[in-house]
Length: 171
Image (cartoon, rainbow, N blue to C red; front, side):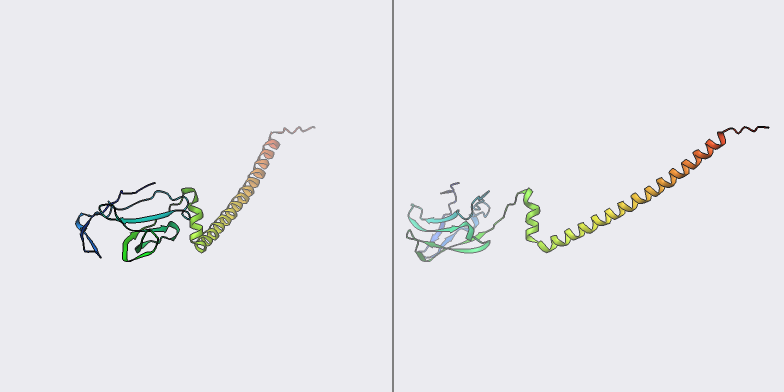
C-alpha cells in the first residue's frame, strides 16, 4: 500500500524555523491514515517525509511499527544520511487499534484477564456440579416413584386376577 503524496498539508507562513499552518482549513479526519491490517509488524515501518512545495527534501523519519505507541508524539526528522536535523520534528497523534479475529476473542480475554477467567471457570464448574447433583436427585426420585408405581400396579393387577378366579366348591 503506497500513500506517497496522498496527504499534503501546505504551510501558511514559513519563517525558516517554524511553519504555521492554517488550522481552519485542516480537517483532522481528512488527514488521518488508517491501515486495515499489518500482517508482520516486526518487519513493517512507517515513513514520515517532509518536503517543500517545489519537491526539495527537508526531512524524514522511519519508525518500525513494533515501536509505535499510542498518544501524542514528537517525531524527530532526519536527513538523508539518517542524522537528526536540529529543531525539526513533527507533532503527531497516534491511535492503535488491535484487531482480533472473532474466533480468537475468547482466548484473548483469557490472556488479558487470567484471574477473572479462573473465577468464572470455577463458578461454571460449581454450577455444573450443582446441576449434576440435582439431576441425580431427580433421577433417584423418579426411580423411587416408578418402583412404587410398579409395585402398586402389580398389586392391583394381582387383586384383580384373584377376584376373577372362580372358586369351585365341592360338596
